[in-house]
Length: 295
Image (cartoon, rainbow, N blue to C red; front, side, top):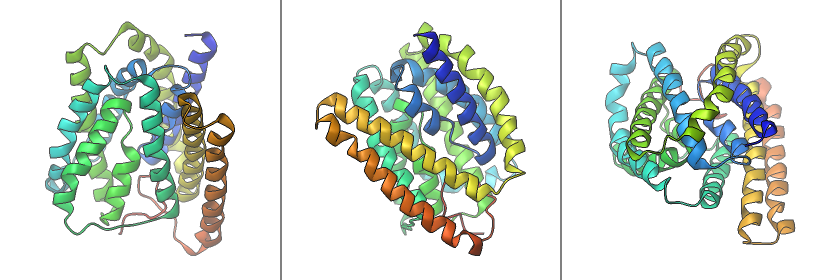
């Protein structure tokens, strides 16, 4: 990997960690779309999961007092999440990197836009739906270390309070990262290439996390969250357009229309957000969704 590619990953890690420190998650969902331009998921995912284990354990520690209250509600999700993570980690060895990129961006883009639109589809049979949802999120995490957007959308849909939302997210992400790391170690997926990325990624985390904590106390958290979501949408749309063009599904000129469409949709959603923003109280919960968990 070239020095320019490593420097790109270092600065991306700093930016993603700053967002994570401010909002509570987002490290992988922001860093992966950029990093996949210069490396493969087989090298990237083990490196990121080693970092995320520490981040998620820290988040769980901060919310440890409320964890026993929320844990029963998270159990059905974990029932599907754990085997999904193990399956995703196993697939990482066999699935082509190009297919991982295409699948990752295809899943992420609509989730980000749904969150930007503040859409909610409350599920009445939550415990039943949580198992297959957890399995799908687990596979995605095992392959890419991304799970924040679907988990946030699910908990927001179910109307968790702000505190329970943070705890539920911390429990789920801690479990998935620990099991993913164990699976990677068992399968021999943690290679020298993954280890070599850590010196370029860790400094950004060490600086960015406290920077994000400091920053969010001095700016409007909801506006910051929405701007980060737009940036993420553009990154993912660019990655999806590139992956579609590289796969030869459609000509490149057509593939990059996905980026243009995303720009139009996000601009409409962003204008709508700022028009109604003065009428809404500032948000204080974690997550990238406009629709905050109910108080």
